[in-house]
Length: 88
Image (cartoon, rainbow, N blue to C red):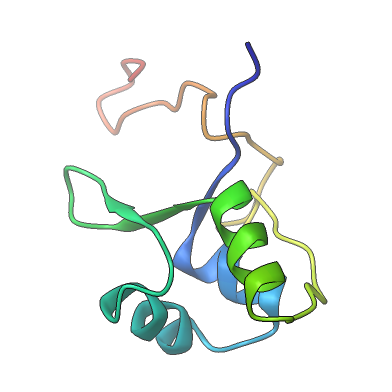
């Protein structure tokens, strides 16, 4: 089974070429499905975003990047090192 691609608000906004606040507005009004992480950050499943764009006849202009914070590209499933050096 293939894992879903999960995007942050910033990644979704880059993909759609809209502001992050527009993505948040779509989520808050119930137009775009999303969930919150334990830390309160919104996450969007890419297939839900693609469905939303299709439903509203909107193109996806950009690309999303897992290297928003610099460094190597990472998928959401990659283990990240915690500040104390242990793995998450």
